[in-house]
Length: 257
Image (cartoon, rainbow, N blue to C red; front, top):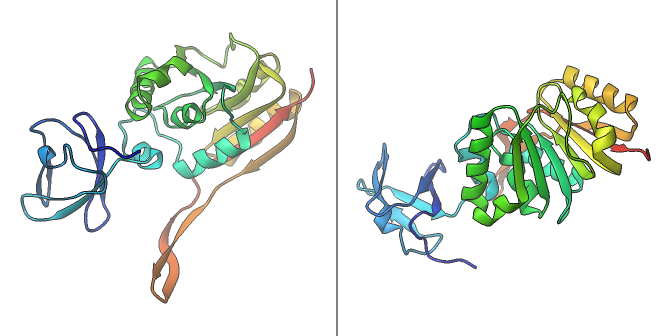
């Protein structure tokens, strides 16, 4: 249900050129742009979808950010997985409510948000404490304090071991995921799904070899290419720019132990 903007809300401002800006509303706050100043007080208690004028009479549309929009604009320590890849990962991993999911390399928390919104219980390993803190804060801002009850992030090295067991799913987003795969033979339940996200094909080759050598079947590797279209009346053409390669998504299912 839509409700008026309140102090502390995240608001996405969109200018006439469709450039987007993420703002946290504060009493007396100001958002400064090359097109003048937008007063937060003009948005507080306004309805979502409201237009607001800057001090230079430039128009900005306002919306609560979708998860995709928030991920692209949120504070980050590590590089985030693109929303186009997150969607594919969520489907391939078949994440469902109350699934027990192991995520290693939580980074800035982009994938964690999608897992938690799907109702999963997420157990995250991260080497850097600043990344772990950033991920938890981003999750809190986007999903609320209650989401942290299902989000257990530890400063651990998954290359060495995985302490917990009986996971339904495992998602790997770190430089050498093939070093984690052997630990999943004990940590994952039979039939469980592992998904690894890697920027280069050489990494994908190594993780596929590790899956083959550690009891995983139905393995596959894909990439997702995102091309928009310009549609204006009868004038229709592909956009000149597209989000092409960002990473490879490799997956497999654990055979009965």
